[in-house]
Length: 247
Image (cartoon, rainbow, N blue to C red; front, side, top):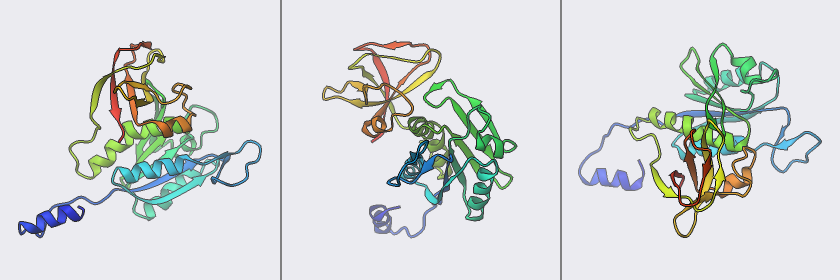
């Protein structure tokens, strides 16, 4: 409740209302190659951006971020992060990276008994993980590429955080919009394409690079996701496309 809502309640004599607490969220990025933005990079290192991305998305969804950290590739790192988060009273822990099918995936190795890891027919965001600890803390395992992490948060994490707040409307509205450009879509997978709406109200890819899950700069330009069904392999100019606006 903000200033205007509190004043409206007070103006009609209401001094008590039922509310829900903000979900308390921990955000954990995985990978020994991650370094803080602005730090010098050595060979094989990249700036860590998913922690900032997911923390800000969680705040936008009404959550309180109580912990944000990076863990390396040691198998016990993610489980230790969950323990620290639960000591702080976390309702959910959001991991990025370490959930694919490779031999050295720290979230899978560390939390395999508490989480289920699956492949979802969507692009980006194919590898996903989810579980619940014995204390009831929700565990989300998202892919490590930035666009994949952002889309996965939108599809899976944001609705859960809204439900924890007692919300009944947990999904953003979607409307049909004509395409202003042509692009290909992945066969057999629902596509969530970072997109923009042009001056004529038509939807276009946010970047010429398409939907690559590593294109973080293109993600920054996006104001919407164009959602294309799995049975469509190409979008042509003028085709009606489902669009989920992010602003």
